[in-house]
Length: 68
Image 1 (cartoon, one colour):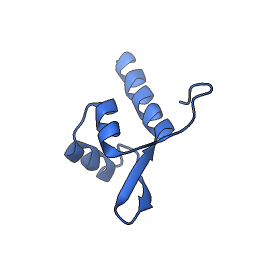
Image 2 (cartoon, one colour):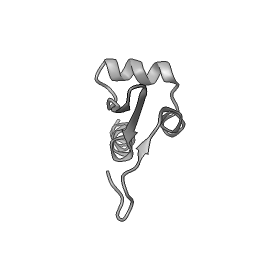
Image 3 (tube, one colour):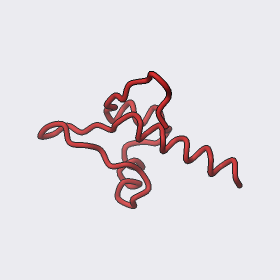
């Protein structure tokens, strides 16, 4: 879910955790279960998440909570 005129940015793990409210272990657990977008590799020891994927994941959580 990309807002108009909002560029896609790459989010590092601390920013992702702040946006979704989960810690590092939970994030990687959800990735392993296929419940959360996997990061993209930026370098030998660096990963990041495209902001549009995180926005979409958040929007899906909100939508599923409202339909219950």
